[in-house]
Amino acid sequence: MARDPENLQFVDLNGSRVPVALRHNPKARRMILRVEGGRSADDPDKVAVTMPKRASVREALQFVESKAGWIEDSLANLPQRIPITDGVIIPFLGVDVQIRHHPDARRGVWRDETGIHASGDLEFLPRRVTDWIKREARREITLRVADKTERLGHKAGRISIRDTRSRWGSCASNGNLSFSWRLILAPEFVFDYVIAHEVSHIVEHNHGKNFWRLVDRLTSDMAGAKRWLHHNGERLHRYG
Image 1 (cartoon, rainbow, N blue to C red):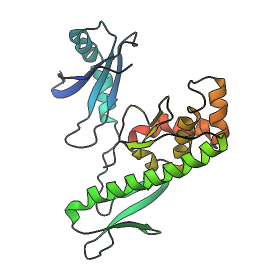
Image 2 (image 1 turned 120 degrees about the horizontal axis):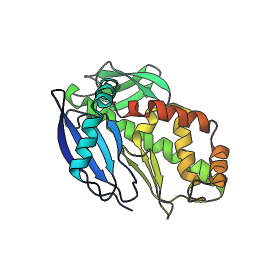
Image 3 (image 1 turned 60 degrees about the horizontal axis):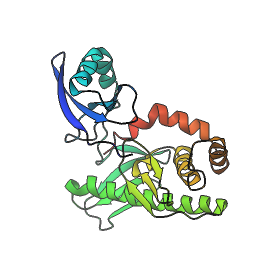
Image 4 (image 1 turned 135 degrees about the vertical axis):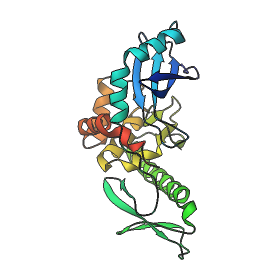
C-alpha cells in the first residue's frame, strides 16, 4: 500500500527550528520516530514521524517535543556531510579513493589505482563525478544481478537505479528490481548482499525461512552485511 505524502512541519527544540516530516502509514500501530540526515543545504537534517492512520498532527508534534533530548543527541551524532569535490576521499566498494581534478585534461571522468579523476571546470566536478558513480553502480549491479539470476535459473525484469532513503533495494512482483546507487559506496560484501536479497525475492516473495536460505546461498556474509547496514547505512546518505 502506498504511503501518504509527507506533511512537513517545524518545531522549536531549545531554540533550534527543526523540520519534522509527518508520514501517515495505515499499517502503523504506534508513532515511530527517527532522525534522517539531509544530503545538501536543500535537504536539511530532519525528524521523521511515522503515524498511525487516526493520529493527528497535534499528537505527532507533541510526541516529537516529548523526545527533544533524544532528537538533539541524534542530530548532533549524525555523520559529517562529505561533498563530492577535489581532494575528498570517498569509499568505493570498500576501498577509499581520492577524487582528483584535472582542469586541462579532456577525458571526462575515469578511475585508476590513484583515484577517481575528473577533467573540465571545477564547478561541474560534483555533478560529473556523481553521474559517473551512478553509471558504475548500474554496471556493477547489472553484472551481479545477471550472475545471481542465472544461478537461480530465473530472469530479472527491468533494473532501476535511484536515490532512495527508506530502502536500499526492492523487487516488484513482475521481477523489476530497484537499487540505490549509494550501495556502491558500501563495502563489497554489503553491496553483494543487497543484490542477493532483492534477486531472491524474484523466487520467494516473502521473508520466510526459504527466502533467507536462498539469500545465504547467493552471498558470502549475510549476517555481517545486515549488521553493517544497521550501524553504518546512514553514512552513505551523507556523500554528495
